[in-house]
Every structure is written in structure tokens, then in C-alpha cells.
Image (tube, rainbow, N blue to C red; front, side, top):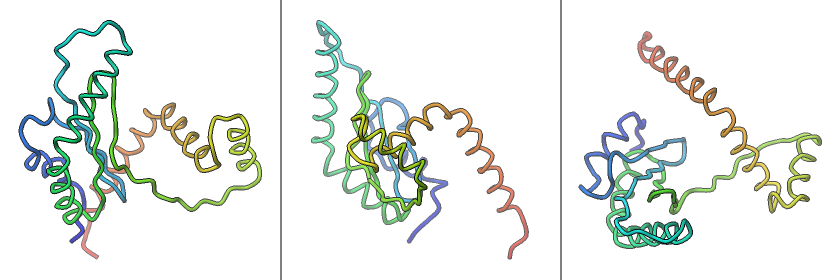
Length: 170
């Protein structure tokens, strides 16, 4: 059964074990995937530099990933059945964030020569390994610089959807 994902945050808050994360996890939903990223408890030891701290954070995330694997798979299967989307997980520790088993979804697009040349320039310059990587890089760059605008657009789309649901039945 596929459901709209309006209640996804509530469902996960009721389903996640106590103590997995400090605070509410960040949940992002699109048409194909639910991505859940939670913050782990702070490190208690002191480390001599940023590299050692980052290594400790990565180690803590790896340990959490291994220790929670079976439960995460069980929860993901239930969510996938409920929402008709794959579930990906991630953990954040201090300044380190790692995502596990995220989807890489092929997207069909038609580009004209100027756009293809832009992608090829990024590949030739070593910024990306392929046109696909270059396109992903460009999308991330636009998202980073247009986040406020994209947030406003998503908010407006939510308002439109709310108005549609309040309208007469078809």
C-alpha cells in the first residue's frame, strides 16, 4: 500500500527506538526515497586536533551503523511498505555526517549542445568524473546558492496542495 508521506515524521517518531538520536531526526522525502538523518550523542573525550576528532566521529557513526543495522532494516521494510518509497539512513556526529544506502536515481534529461559543453568542461577540468557527476555537481551548486528561494517555492507548493484538498471533489 502506497500512502502520501504527510505523516512520515510522526510515524518514524513512534517507531524509532528511544536513545538512538539526540533530538528529532531530520527527515527528507521525495518521490522515490525517505532519508532519515539523526544526530548521535556528543563525544565525551578530548582529541588533540580536528583530524583526530573527525576520525573519532566517523568511528562512532560506523559503530552506530553496525549496532543498529538489523533494527534499521526492519523499520525500513515497514516504512517502504507503508509509503512505497525506499528508506535511506544517515547519522551526524559533531561535524561529520554519513549517509547509508541512499538511492542514485537515473533522471532522463535532454540537453542541447551549450549545456552538454558545460558538463564536458567540468569533466575535462577534473571537477567531475562523468557528465552524470557533473550534472549532479551543478544541481548541488544551484541548491546551495538558491536554498532560500527553493524553500519559499516548496512552501508555496504546499499551500497550493492544501487548497487543492479543500476544493470540491472531482
